[in-house]
Length: 82
Image (cartoon, rainbow, N blue to C red):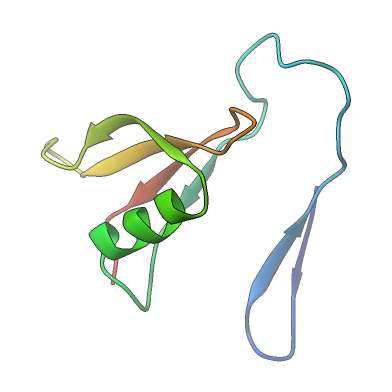
């Protein structure tokens, strides 16, 4: 995995495609913190791209996050932000 910042200020993560089937939890876990949208707006945007909600912890104290998975089953969280 490689993280790089562009001239526009955006950070990009680059990874390698794996052809093996997922057999265990991910070795890396991403926590996404929206800056230009609410948590709910970002969750809705990601759902529209094909992800699904695994666990909705928006009411959890402390914190408030949503565990999601992309169409291939890779899990990540959307934290409160904005």
